[in-house]
Image (cartoon, rainbow, N blue to C red):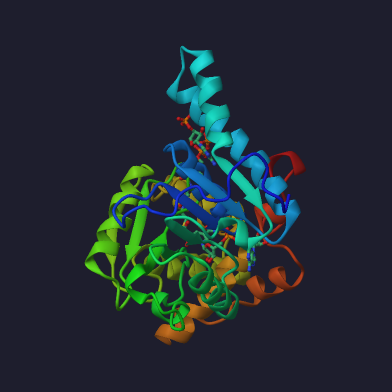
Length: 309
Ligand code: CAA
Ligand code: NAD
């Protein structure tokens, strides 16, 4: 998997800032696989890079399954078109464990683990390896976009692209303006977001941007409520689905997001805002320490059947 098969290394190296034709997504987990999928669905060539071969194999399977779901809906009465949509989209995605395979593109979207040092190290490498015109973007859910990119030189060609889980379904994209982003880069990111089917909104580089600044406290309070034994996990989730119209309850959603990601998010929010609602939660810390990350690991607040993970 660390050798690219059947493609030239240079998808494109001469696109202008306003025409993103080739994309690399770094991190092939929940978010990266979804971002690669919607990019390929939109007709763009995409490299998906992950350090873990098994993650890429998992991503390959989930992208295929999700493309089939999209195809069934989009081409209800035309099985042949549905089939070629899936095949062509899959063919546009090339996977590799070597970052160098994905540097010669117009846009790189980073979707690796929510750890500042790991993200900074990756952006420093990308800044050195990518051609001049390449735009770099982070999908961080809570960290400062400026801090992640603080050591790169191309600050005018850098910003935040915050997608939502599951990426193929959630229609929002928060485009985060870095301190020194150029107007041209910002417009290019907005245009690209639309091209992959998202409604783009703009935010400043504030903790949690818009959605997580509001969802974070809600999620933390739900976990504390469950930890105190105020109600069962199931009843807390039913309450918010039937009483407030949410598609998922807060505890189901925390498992769906990934408890490791949720823990990192709350910790960054505490550090950045100092607000007590983001204080550590014993239950969350314990589950993460036990490797119970939620749906992706088979157990979190709930247990999952292997076939549904
Ligand atoms: N890929 C493609 N299509 C998918 C999909 C995927 N991964 N997951 C679901 N779908 C499609 C299904 O095919 C189905 O389509 P139709 O209704 O047209 O047939 C539709 O989505 C609904 O799916 P299901 O019937 O399987 O299940 P559901 O009705 O329970 O919906 C859900 C699943 C879309 C995930 C819904 O429960 C939901 O919206 N949950 C809330 C998700 C949410 O809040 N996300 C944001 C989290 S915050 C975040 O992401 C930011 C952060 O930084 C942490
Ligand atoms: P995940 O744990 O599912 O996937 C992370 C992947 O990154 C793993 O496959 C890991 O092997 C890979 N990785 C780690 N270091 C790497 C490196 N240096 N190079 C290449 N690959 C590397 O995590 P996720 O849920 O997909 O989250 C990824 C990012 O997206 C995080 O910053 C997170 O905060 C953000 N985010 C998550 C959600 C969500 O709901 N899970 C929503 C929006 C944004």
